[in-house]
Image 1 (cartoon, each protein chain N blue to C red):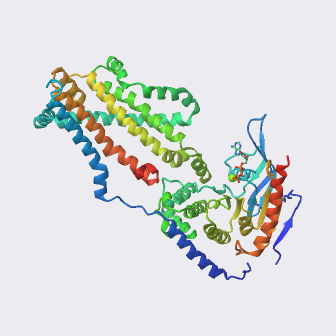
Image 2 (image 1 turned 180 degrees about the vertical axis):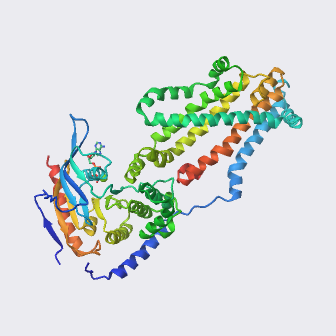
Amino acid sequence: MAPALTTDPSGTAVVDDDIPAAVRIDHVHKSFGRAGAAQPVLDDITLDVRPGEFVCLLGASGCGKSTLLNLVAGLDRPTAGTIEVPGGRPALMFQEHALFPWLTAGRNIELALRLRGVARAERRPEAERLLELVRLDGAYGKRVHELSGGMRQRVALARALAQDSRLLLMDEPFAALDAITRDVLHHELTRIWSETQLSVLFVTHNVREAVRLAQRVVLLSSRPGRVAREWTVGIPQPRRIEDAAVADLSVEITEELRGEIRRHGKH
Amino acid sequence: MASTDTSPQAESQDLAGLEAGLDALDSVRVERTPFTQVLLHKVLPPAVAVVLVLAVWKVLVLAHVTDDYKLPDPSAVWHSLHELWLRGTLLDIVWTSVSRGLLGFLAALVLGTPLGLLVARVRFVRAALGPILSGLQSLPSVAWVPAAVIWLGITDSAMYAVILLGAVPSIANGLVSGIDQVPPLYLRAGRTLGATGARGAWHILLPAALPGYIAGLKQGWAFSWRSLMAAELIASSPDLGLGLGQYLENARTDSDMPGVLLGILLILFVGIAIDLIVFSPLERRVLRSRGLAAAAR
Ligand SMILES: Nc1ncnc2c1ncn2[C@@H]1O[C@H](COP(=O)(O)OP(=O)(O)OP(=O)(O)O)[C@@H](O)[C@H]1O
Ligand SMILES: [Mg+2]
């Protein structure tokens, strides 16, 4: 099988307005700071995620990945350019679980349902169903601090799914977990993704994780962040992180990422 | 989708087993402290302290360090208490003060909470009132008693005014610092879930600020009680119901030292009791439910 298709080495993606998109990021710039001493963080990012597509955004630390997700989630505004999310407010899963400690696991999910307008009587069964989906059937009444790191991330995933948006944004959600737990969650996420037909924009700096999960890997350059390169991952699911094909493509992408980082050491 | 060399079913089962194992390994077990432990660590130390104080007192009396009318025997204080009880006025006196204190505290709560919310969330209000509120907090509320008496006369209203001036700043400031300490992550998470405006305040901001708010309430109660005692002491009049402050003042005019000591002890006792019955359990519950370290003690 062909492990990967390399597309578009120039880094400028072509946007076709006729194809429907789950999110359309169009020539987005973002800088922080006052007008005089503005620090450009994102520079002319153009990127589409198609409905049902799983895209991984890869880049060195500080290149603006979280900034981009915040823009898509509507938590911040781009300095220039537009972001369209046709399906309405996207769900966002933060790097830290961001569960509310004053609520139980189940209540966290019910709050998301309530804010979405789900009727009171339907909330409890729906929350139980979502907990089952992330394989945490017994955790409804558990307090956040009584859950392990992996369980918290799964509750956070269930809460994000409770928003029922068509687009799920994930900001390094598994970065703080041990390899085995992460492996399990990769499996769960791919399963849920293929069951729900969600579009996913997943941020990571772990190349293998990106190749394990994504249909398409987008590499961002640093300072300012630009789309440096894209790969379409043709390896069929279910994949495993230790598959040879995953490893091969990871080596190739890592090489490219190193080049990106090295470029900065030169000046 | 095409399958790889391991069958997806087997893999799925394998991972589910792994998952169950990881969850079992990682879960925290919460245990209740046994009753004897509570007795040993919570009840015994303060009891020992009280006995020690009584012993030192008794020794000082036996050693005749000063005249009897200045330092009466502990049994004389006990006798005063017993007498009050027999006359049937003890509970009346305590209740007069406690009901004033609690009512004043509730009024302070009703005023202080929206005030704190405004100061925390509206920039102009914060700039205007923030420093004044902090300043008022360090002003002893006794200082308000003369003003309250001139404005309102020696009445219950004057008492309540002094309580409000003492407790409202504490409650408002507690809420402000509680809100200031809410991690921005919760607010952002709330916004992505659609909790903005009033819904954001109700579902995210206020529950997140609860620990700071309760600390403010606790301090607000202490200030209410203190202010009330100051007001009752200074603005005592036979027209008002007899409260602990007035009882203390009457004992002073009668040069009744056992009565004075009893008054002091009763005031202390009520302050501690309300804290132990109302605020400490509330605080412990809130902190414990969030897994915050202070509750582990
Ligand atoms: N609110 C802000 N004000 C000023 N600068 C900011 C702000 N937010 C982010 N930055 C800057 O923007 C750059 C990108 O930050 P961002 O958090 O998006 O990086 P990242 O790619 O997510 O990094 P990591 O992989 O470490 O999470 C950083 O240099 C950071 O200092
Ligand atoms: Mg980040």
